[in-house]
Amino acid sequence: MSILFLVLAALAGFAFGAIWYTALAKPWMRLSGVPLEGDAPANRSDPVPYVSGLVAALVTAVMMNQLFAAAGIDSAGAGLLWGLGLGAFVAAPWLVTCYGFAARPRGLMLIDAGYATGGSGAIGLVLGLT
Image: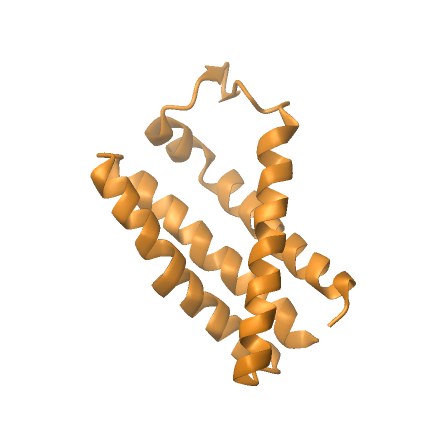
């Protein structure tokens, strides 16, 4: 697999997050307790969360690519299904555990676990196309 497809897969996961958090911006901001400036997060112009999010998506795409190659996953449907499964049954449970012990709001846990699931699905879909 070329680095281009890994980057495209990472961008797909990142784009899913942009759509997900735009749609759920108001409840996420309320539940997360993030500092606000008006109706937007105070750190909206800080590039660090965006860069680290994209790097995290790339790391996820690289590992998922290795898993998919070993498992023989080679179609968009299988990539999507396995990506969603990895998000829902590997990534999300860790978030649930951390949020539970940190006494974070359940709604925030659902929003962020949904992103982990959907973002992994988007990455898996792109990897399955290659």
